[in-house]
Length: 378
Image (cartoon, rainbow, N blue to C red; front, top):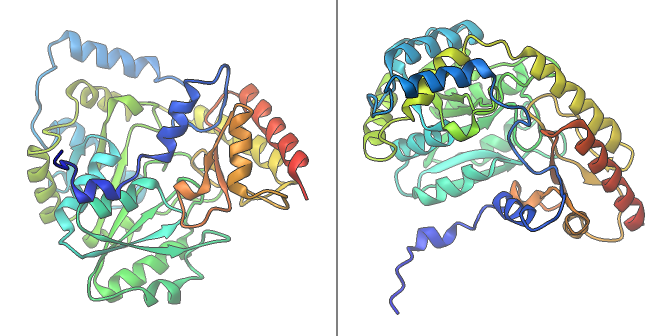
């Protein structure tokens, strides 16, 4: 039979995260610490706005770039939070941050163009770059996941084909929040070599320590800022995000959206308008407590950088008789669902644990992981 599957599709493996999700369906009462979405529900006031939009017949296509009231409100929100000066022509509404990233890479990549991003990385960066004909250039940031001390290393991989740098802060899978010095390092390199920066800021409200810095505040002329509503407002299934950047790039992204996503879901756009008025600080404070619970529970037996944001921690076992990958397999066998580190990395020394779960699930998971560590410790 003729092989109908393209070579570029074959390059991409199924998501390791989804494989664990599928496994969870087969395990009775799993301790699920694998999920990358909040454990709280969408606030009622936002749900009511979505229902109102549906009942009022706002269910058809919107304009491709997104409804103007939402674009105006996103621009106002971003400018206030980041000190930027975007206007509505530099903003579009996307089908989540993943939709924005897809459009950005489709617009900027020619075959063989290189995209730099940092290990550990979100799984989508590598696979989408491959799919759209680009070449991933992956820069190791272990053990501290900082960038300010890796300027020479980053510069050493830049070639004539380098098109852009992707940064993610707060980061999935590490919870790392890039410091002002980290951001300035990326800015100096991007400016020196005339590179775009794609800044994935989907976890921007989940900040527990320090301060959030966006490269858009110092390099707006060549930054594509991606943000959204999935994490802060638990609207993961509603697929609603936004992109801001240079007008000519946003214009092209809108053009490509006509032939891909068409528009972001209509009812979710109207709900997002209301969401930007909702104070989520109490939810974020609760997640800081979850972060503390996980970090304090794991630090004795695991090498771990304390996450400053997002809702992930990325530990590695200190001293085992088995490999880190085998340790993850043992955890999964015992019903503790965590994600092996090689899903997010060229290394296989760590694992990702999501603390987007209720406190009792976190307690049970940490207790079981420590018990298994003691069982297999050297």
